[in-house]
Amino acid sequence: MKTTTKELCIQGLLVALVTISTMVFQIPVSATQGYIHLGDSMILLISVFFGAKYGMVAGGVGSAMADLLSGYGHWAPFTFIIKGIMGYLIGKIASFSEKNQKFFTPRNMTGSVLGILWMVFGYFVGGGILKSSFAVAAVSIPENLIQGFAGFVIFIVVGIAFHKAKIYKFVLTR
Image (tube, rainbow, N blue to C red; front, side):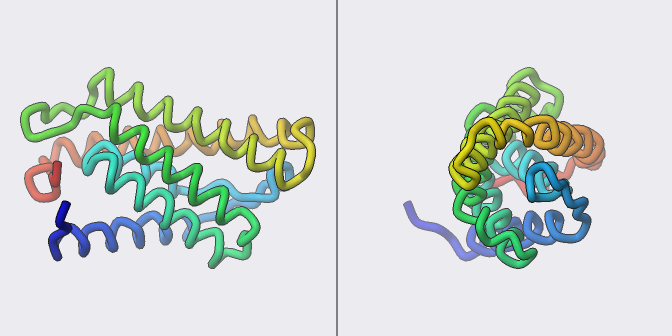
């Protein structure tokens, strides 16, 4: 499979979008030794509108870069895997395409919710490994659920705006 210059540029911009949106607004959470951010909403949008490949790379690389640049380097390897799989999973389940130009579909919403639940589970496992205790890591579940579903709300609001603006005519790469 050959990657075009256009696809490479789009991918780079999407990675930067996830990195910046993760870093621009951070609320530290002591229970997780992490932070609540806007990056998840971007991963959701990218995965639905652009597909699994773009969601995986933007989610994994963009989020890991944000961890490295924000002083959370110990989480970067976990984030790379967790958010990469999150983007891939959402993109594979989502049904947005040139033929199906509907934003509110059961597949798009199901993929997004499953992606968020995967993220919560992934950080639980990652936290259990980093802290050497899954009991301690379980404390992070509520904060990660809040982070994920706050991202889901933003995803819905921005997704509706993108859909009404027919942004898919300009960015659809599937």
